[in-house]
Length: 408
Image (cartoon, rainbow, N blue to C red):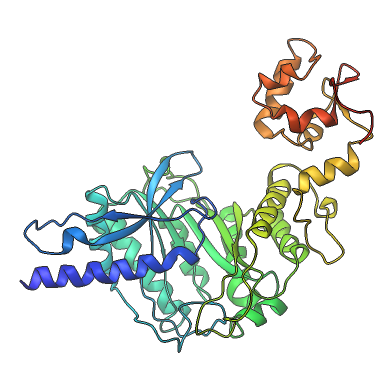
């Protein structure tokens, strides 16, 4: 009876913590993807109620293309910080839940053994300071890895105020680490989280991650089979911004994003649209439109993967991207409408600036040109290129595609 009661209590707490993680976008999950509720099958079949408990898992795609069921949760929803936008802020009236590291590790191991979850994204509210909270997160994953033998995917959050040695240890046991910058600079952060320090608490750990990757040999102590045998490689790093919560412009967000990509080698920046939470100081502020989130992702990919510079982004007078058109299309209309590229001579970096052409299709064009000239749009269609988007900005052996005007 005691076991049944304890298990039901643990599952209830786990459900509560995982259901509150939808606010936390994830580098593995598609932006805006919703979790699904997976029924937990009790190890004790006669225990009433446990089989009906639902656990939230998220469909996720890892960098190697593998799809997994990712369980996203907090170690505790108790938090001593008073961030204006956050549902877990100190003083907000709601039921909190907490796990001890070994208790949580063993419960997640049950989920993994039963195929309910294949990987984990674990964060936490701040309880007892950033150092103590980080110790508890690290201890949880160490128990999973070295005591329970878990070799699956782990995304581990680095807490504000964590020490450099803790960051290094997190990198040794996780496949991905992240630090939520929340805002693009210290001035904007003060409007979201007045007691967090942008440079000392948030940006510094990301700099340590880059420094450790550049100056130290990666660990060989384990290989994460879910992530494709990571042993011998340092984990990737990502961050999150709360978009629209502090009145920041897209220019501010993308300025910081460009710095993170180029200087700290971040894998990805995530833009979580602000949504007002009842009983918080920002509860009456309007939510951020979804189209703004979409445009920011499009622009960030141009900076990361397509060779664009920040100065080439089509910002409007208020420093924001146009909502009615994606930034690559806007750039092409300004720069390529009157001067289309010759598809048979353009370099890879030039092809990447054409709408409908990405890194893989640019390589496909270069390979196809070795076999002969591309004389009409049908040659692109066979390469998987969105011809309707690309053709207006290209010449095919000196000629525009049929039906394309000389000028826009």
